[in-house]
Length: 81
Image (cartoon, helix red, strand yellow):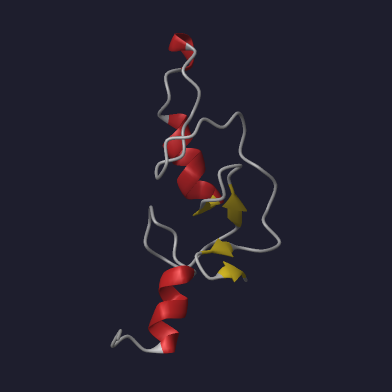
């Protein structure tokens, strides 16, 4: 049985895997992974445009064409929040 408190579990679910902070202006990629808009923007800015390599999700490596609009809900392992 897990010893973490419900608050800790919720904080982990609502934390960006890049900056490890609570989501700021969250977005959901087509693959379903969540990030802060600035974090995923900076991550995708490192892609070499001249090589025509599309940005990929840092977690599952699925290609995405553009950063989606702001998320109204955040997808977690436990469902939508």
